[in-house]
Length: 441
Figure 1 (cartoon, rainbow, N blue to C red):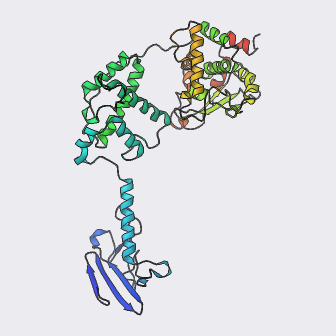
Figure 2: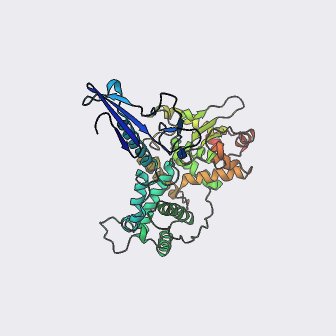
Figure 3: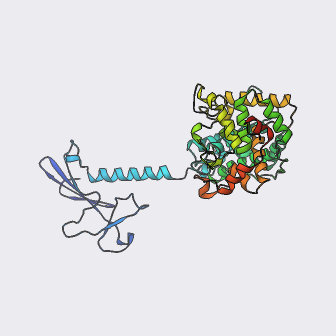
């Protein structure tokens, strides 16, 4: 290109003039009028990210023809732009590259159709799930899912590999599971049959099936497989909910007499219904002390649902907590209600060494008491709490357990109503609780 003559390009023209050591570079963009609405002699000012974003229409005034987002700049050959400016082709190239990068970063990440068969035949379900977690493929469900949901999906993958493992697979070699393209309804039916034979409850199998189906449906939606396999119907009949009898509550409470932290946790669980992962990570800061006629209030955020919950506490419950306050203050890490019974630093506190020791102690204690069908004692406390409140007033148990918190109430603090406070304070308490709190008449 020589100085002084215009160079015609498909999208416009460039005019170069030379004077001394500088080169004057002019860029003119030509856009058909049909490309935008309204106005004459308009050009698109590409300052908002290209055709996919809002475009401004620039109408040149006299003497302003050729001005745009990439107006002509004065450049010195070999020494870059003067006063921080840059040439129009450089600005245009930089904008196009940024626009392309933005499109690549925000476009759905799917398996290309031409690679689908190969991908489905060489990828296990865990590999696919981990690629979604890492962002190489579109994430499953909402972008911000709870840690509990992710944990459930990992548990689902573990069960999937366990129940699909061939009998002749080497014991010293991990089984990755079948390729996602090889999964059939018959295989799924066999997996659920094996799960039932292994002793998994109907509710557990139903949950396993639900999470498994979510992953396969997502695989189909991102093109990893042509379509999700048809899932067989499984028996979702739930076993009767296990709750503590009055005699069992009495026996457990008395057996914990030498273990005040666990005894107080048992009382709190039966009266407030917390999940064990929340119960054993409570802090004294989560409690508001009673004042006048207002009872003490426990506030916490559920680790499973992320719901903010607030539950008033009966006098007998508060008395048991006050009794263990000196023990908590003397602990190596003060501030926790039940120090040493869980680990706040563990990603999954209920799988920590402290939690396993706690549960092992409770199982041994129940075995000595000859209390059967109590593999998950703290969940039984939660079910017992719900039953106690529901037998007095329908709906109160759901509130205490957090099941009735929906919509805005599911995400923010909910003040317990006067009805809730009255029922909590008037709920009949086991005689052993009253004796332990020294509230017997």
